[in-house]
Image (cartoon, rainbow, N blue to C red):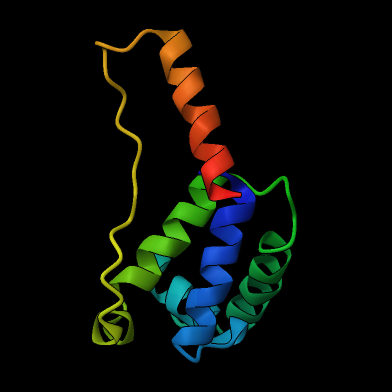
Length: 110
């Protein structure tokens, strides 16, 4: 799954969960750090806002945000019946097949 698709998923989930970027930043900060620092949360909110717009944002960062959202009680209460997709490398598939499947998956996501 590509960066833009994950960014879109996060934005949609934030809307469905009625979470602002600032509220979400609080959840992310709480998940990552043990202290309570309002200034650091504000800076994180600014970073998240930028990360949800940039095409160069690393997918690992977006994956961690999706994981945090999925664990949120409000998400579970929505009963979205969505399962997070995750790529698992298989040794039985050669690189050509893997690249073809990845390209097809990208087309289907568009």
